Amino acid sequence: MLPEASAEERVENEETLLQSLASMTAATAPMTSHIVSIVTKRCCDELARVKSLSSTLRAMSNKSMPKNPSHWVS
Image (cartoon, rainbow, N blue to C red; front, side):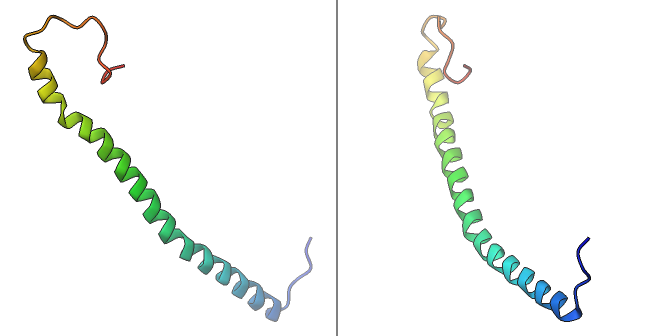
């Protein structure tokens, strides 16, 4: 077992932990913002394809049945 810490040591340990927590918390906001921007861009890229889906289907309405699966499904 560890020896019992004095009150002064406990205060110092708590201050050290609070400083570490503050530095990690400060890094969290920029990382979160960066992650959100990456996910947003990827979602927008995929949604751009969906936007053109209706015009593609209208253009295909007079054509024969497809022989290969759509890239939307596979």
